[in-house]
Length: 437
Image (cartoon, rainbow, N blue to C red; front, side):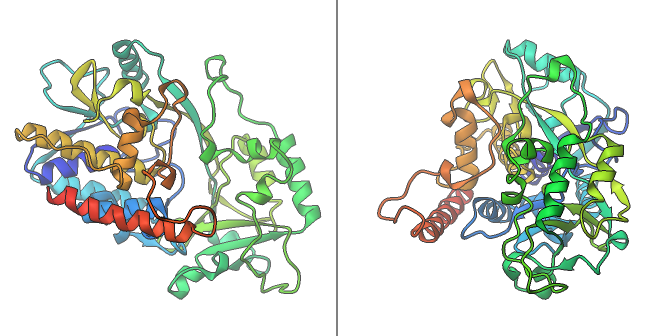
């Protein structure tokens, strides 16, 4: 995500780019193709609301800046209510094709096994959460710090024609969306209280992936917890998380409110694949299929992909990077994307967009200041390059808590909509000003 966006931005500014990608010569345990910007977890870019949601604002900023990732996301969107979700294969193919066709981009297939030579004058390391062991070790040696890491998990994908539509139904929560496709973007599978409790028992009892000794102290990212971890925190945790039953009416039984609901979201444009929303899991494959088939409507489900878990790597950016995203000990190296400690596809791509522009400006003999922290992109870069506490640094999604407060706007729950609108209005003005500058 970040590397593709960085390459695109720099090339669009007139700077030649060599984009190094180790796949297919060197595989990872999560990727399945050799395509650029392959989505290995969810296919969702999350909320597209640019007035009330910080990630929706980030979408807006990337569109205004000519972002490749968001442009291809829009071009290959699938219905997802108020969210932006994409057909993952078509999206990756499109990003790859655009970069392959760009006259100032050269794609070099093969691993860079460590930090690049000193004579590479401007480098962006955007290796994402799956940095190769050799490069991760080289970064650790250069920074004299142990790389931080956390576990991330992959949600299962189900073939649509194996879902029992006598039990499931199409509906977005609260019927959100401007079109019928958006209002019916999710498949819903209801559970009564007994079914829910049996399901929780099965999750807790299922055999899980065992971690290696060196992985056992690695924390999870709170925004992408496996369902087992949520269940271990309390029997009601899932029911107040991805299985919350609010805003939905079961047309098969409209007078009975479900105790919990499992939602599935379209994963491709054809509508043949659906991923189980929020169901990242570390259950072993055999047990995983058995447990998931306890969900009403999925008793005969066929899985295109079962869930999994992998260890992600990120650096202590507040301690190691300057405001231009450069490594303080070696300024020819910039970092971008999830390796910097931002979390999420959109946040990673936004950091790639920024790194590409900063690096290209430097090559062109200009100094481009980082965007104001009143913008979504600026709030993220400010957070990872000094706004966060280095001692307790953990991956972070974009959120309004990263923005400077506004004077004269109501606080508390009642004033939230006005406050969020004021944040986004201010951000759009400041982002336009930064782009113009």
